[in-house]
Image (cartoon, rainbow, N blue to C red):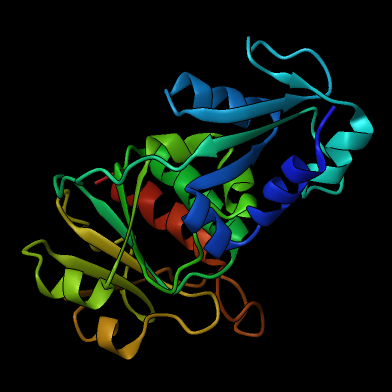
Length: 237
């Protein structure tokens, strides 16, 4: 049985303001919840509509799960987790930076890509979507615990780094021809506006993904797809 106050609290975590105030976020899906627990993230409460390998889970009905889930087809497991304390991040190795990426699905996919390619730090501008947004968490499929997502003034961060800065634009050196330094920062822009003018002015190496199809086709690539292509190429060099 789940109380009305519990339902209200879980629903409130859809909002960034309430997540920040309560220092809690929601994760849905057996794999996502399992991976967060395995990584040592602390659960405030785990709700399950069927058996789940967690000693302190709270069993609820499928109908109750529908009431607290944000998914059209709810999973059998929903976890309320504590937002971990922000850890100091190392600037060693490649760093991925995002400038105003607002689509939750794209950010979630990019976090998974960072996990896959071993990118330990993802630097996000302050107007990038919150990594604890339920849709972002869902899209990460558990990779959120493997990547340090840092929100900061991106312009200030780039101005104060000594690492080479690469930026993706429609016109630049081909990603297949320009080697990406193993200590470089790769900056990707928003889906609709690309890199801001301030960030663009700080980019030292402009790269692009060349088009091989018809000029009458797609105008641009989804930012998560672009990240996958560039990172895949970067680790070949």
